[in-house]
Length: 225
Image (cartoon, rainbow, N blue to C red; front, top):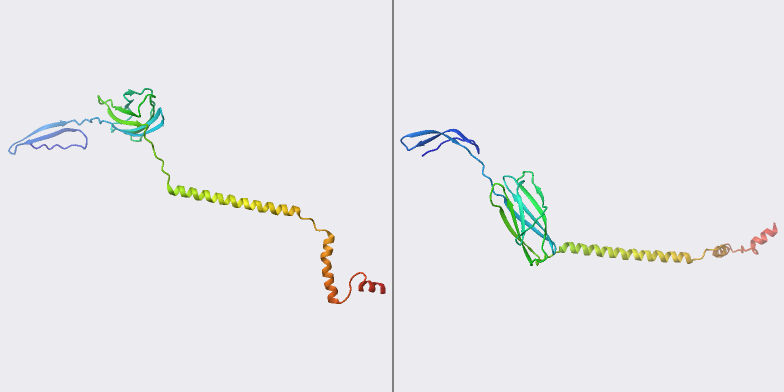
């Protein structure tokens, strides 16, 4: 049997001839085919679970659906107990087929070390929902690693600051000593100036070979005038 209709891509096949042959005779009949879309199940992915304290945690998840994600319902249960009054915060991408959500979870005080989280996404085109599981592990600890390069950079910066502070302190002490010495020094009097000039007068007398004192050569010259 040979079927040879022509059709548009992802469209309907209308008023096309169906040719059936057994190798000897051929029968042709008019063929109409309607192509209808089939709904897709949403894809649920549970992401981060962050512990806030002993009674609270946050859960992040994403949903993908080619039919659109705007009308999906969500149900979250902790150890089999459905959580009410949840207010998840969601971001839908521009295409409208994917979204990411996060919500706060209140954990019962009489919990065990691990709490099971059951998340169900409902699509109105299907009678059952899509389910995923994860746990809140209160025994888990997250180790914080420090980058060795950042630690060395921090040590170098600290050493530089200490050295700069010590240098500044030394400069302040030196300035203080200079100010104190200046304040303690006495002013120079006129008598000190005269005493400092006397050696210069003695040198001149020695060069000329005369006595320039008031009782010396100058005094006699003034008396002979």
